[in-house]
Amino acid sequence: MEIQYQYSLKNLNTFGIEAKAKQFIAVHSIEELQLVLDQNKTQKKFILGGGSNMLLTKDIDALVIHIDLKGIKIIDEDENYVWVESQAGENWHEFVLYTIDHNFGGLENMSLIPGNVGTTPVQNIGAYGTEIKDTFVSCQAVAIDSQETKTFTKEECSFGYRESIFKNEVKDHYIITSVVFKLTKKDHKINTSYGDIIAELAKNKITKPSLKDVSDAVIAIRKSKLPDPKELGNSGSFFKNPILLKSEFEKIHKQFPEMKYYDISETEVKVPAGWLIEQAGFKGKRFGDAGIHKNQALVLVNYGNATGQEILEISRNIQDTIFKKFGIYIEAEVNVI
Image (cartoon, rainbow, N blue to C red):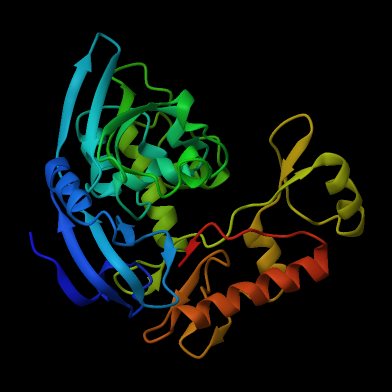
């Protein structure tokens, strides 16, 4: 365990942006993490997980601590459920495949989401009708200042749409080291409510889908729409789908009756940000080595040598254009560094 200087982060962020860490160290256990924090109390710190939900726009003038804790284990089970703990440094998709291989249900709709397990509660990641909060039990975290460990329950995490306590009240105060999920062992609640999944299953003539069938369908859909970060730098969905009050939305909808939307409560609707971006004419556009993906307008991409600043400028242009055209502000889901 050794601190390295002027360390390239190009291979540690899914956008593939070239940026350097003033100092860099990878930790592989809670004890190593506590030691590094204790020995560098006065240092400015930057915590790095899978690098999948961030856009680096500059070098990191801090000690970058890469959380590389590995391990998956069953900590409890009964006739119907199993409690599985994953260390923070495990790749999310590989962890999902582990649960499917063991016939544990609940995470299959979130197959192929980039990133590591430890960062999933921060964003309350979700896809195709499921979110982390649906199966989340608790997570263990280390306090940056005191190095003490703390367990956060589901209730304490204050999960919302792509929101949690880790993005708000305790941001920059704790580092998640492991996460516990409660998954089904039988009578799985198969969620095929999204049209894309229904269509993919029908294409394969599957009428009674298994966990693996749903996972395979999600993987096929995501591969058809989203570029592989190993081949084309990206961070998945760059923007959140805006949530509007129905009273506010109805005024906009009168002006744009073709606008797609989903009811999410009696008072709120969700508008697909990808539809807004596509209608604003950005889908497939390229600006030098930065651009918007041809198959999915929500995804901004690095074609090779784009800087983070160039991608950020495109995102701001998209936000401004959509606000002027529709009167709707779309918020970035990706953390801009």
